[in-house]
Length: 297
Ligand code: G1P
Image (tube, rainbow, N blue to C red; front, side):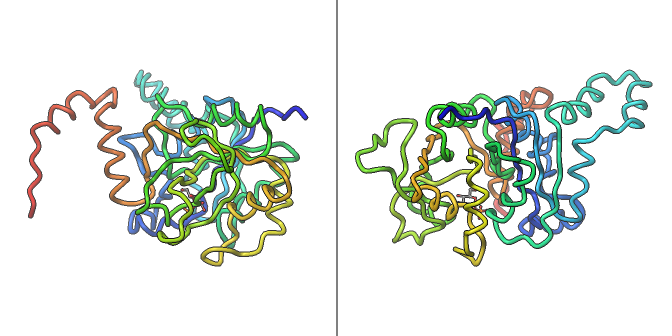
């Protein structure tokens, strides 16, 4: 059966951002800037570049700044125009032009599966891409687009995969390739999925990173998914239920550059790496960085 094109994306953004307190007391963590661009804009730009036209943000009360950021600001635009600040004007208009944006509140967050379940009406029978905004992919390295190609070929579920090694795997959904699958290939059919296994129980070191393409059937599967790891409704469990009912599940192995903005240390590294190639400050920042000697105290 031919698959439908994927035009809709879901971005779960209801979390409290506890790891980034006190900043997140006032500002959603998704708006934490990479130099001047919030990480979430980079993620929406990635979806738009892959052909997505409509983005649903699953948010919680207190996250209205995300809607402000992707909305227009006529007063600010007028003020910038009056001062002929064209670059700044373009920068505030860029996020408003990427896609049509939609919002739904997740009032009582019960996990990633619960967040995605909130997109059922938005999906309206179509497949959706899900992008977790903590994961930023380097714009030179594509992941979502090849995942959409795999969806067009096989249908079913497609997840982004990264070999994270044995020490990190317990923080992720972990996958088991089909018997006989070529592990060196970029596209791997998957037999099993386990959410956050203990290091010693992990069946592989291949982790699901924050990119998914999900068929319309995922919403019925989520409805009958009981709380799993951590007492949360796990998207991993709903995808596995689909696999058990005969729906193909493929992983696309990412070999590019990924920035994890979800914890303090990785966020700081992401900012440094992306600042080093930023068009305004990159050259000078690289020169400074070469000379910089951190003071251990
Ligand atoms: C979620 C998923 C997990 C996935 C991870 C990717 O976990 O449940 O399967 O590997 O995202 O970032 P979370 O990071 O929300 O705990």
